[in-house]
Image (cartoon, rainbow, N blue to C red):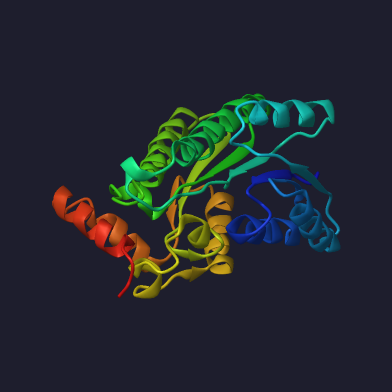
Length: 260
């Protein structure tokens, strides 16, 4: 059986890097995308020890032409993608009206537009082969509004809805779509978002990137449509379906605020 090739965005650290290690361990070739060429080079060196091919592409996916550029480059190189892992994303803490416009639009560009375009580009070849997997990394943030991170939460709600819809459309195609929803995770995400001192991290704690990635890896390999990492996160996500919306939103704000 020929080796499969997995494309992972946001692969230079955190969950993306841990996913890459798991795929490499099981002898999947890799195409890794992130902004930093230096970080990608170090990651590639580590992963090549597993005897797999690792291609790295330094690219800022918030740049509108970037997804098509990536797809075209892989087409020119004759690299077929068997699994697409849309992992790249970021959030910003603060009241919406006070956030810089670039931060707001950047979240939409990366978390929604790039993810959607990459999925649209790589799906047709998978459908033509009657084989393939897509995993879109959302978040437990997808299940409720998120005051102080309004745009981030909304983008992840999009990913959840979008993934579930196309999973249904592709039910008989041989291609599966998994929406993976981690909760708070120890990565650079929290520092970039400015939430490392929030109650969700300081009071309730976070999972390790290694454990979260293992949950995601199992979910995509088992072709699950939806996976939530961590039993406690599953319980919280399900509880939002039954609690009053205003209460859920108020609690969401409280856990996002700085721990005293």
